[in-house]
Image 1 (cartoon, rainbow, N blue to C red):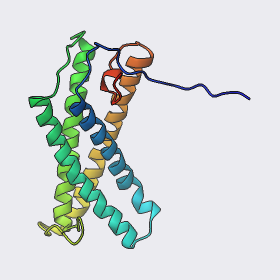
Image 2 (image 1 turned 180 degrees about the vertical axis):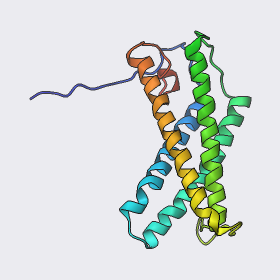
Image 3 (image 1 turned 90 degrees about the horizontal axis):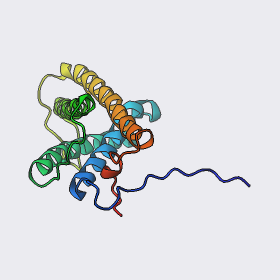
Length: 187
């Protein structure tokens, strides 16, 4: 009987620079919600027929979008006030690429959330329970807002995949602590 090899990523060693628990929690919660929202937005129409279940999932999608908006603001405020900044080992071109990627990720997050919120108001969507947003603006904006929201979300996911791949390259090829310092498990 053969055993499958396991892949483990150990936490950063004691004393190594790591992000604080708040930054790590907000990072992973935002990443998980964004992935779930993207999956819903990308595949729900094809998976479920029109009806109360699909309507309920769309309402949850909009609710979670507002939660992501709050998480993004919370993460930025946390990083500015209480979060731990880590020293830069090499301020060269790869660091500049990383900074540009972070800037693009945040910019795209704001664009996706902003377009989603605009879309929610143009549609007057139901939210939690019996609460519904007022329908504001011209209904003709529904289709373009939906398309822009979807395009921005797809670009965000491509960039997030690049971000994740870069973390894996750091870990498996360069054997540094870049990935381990953002892991939620501490030694």
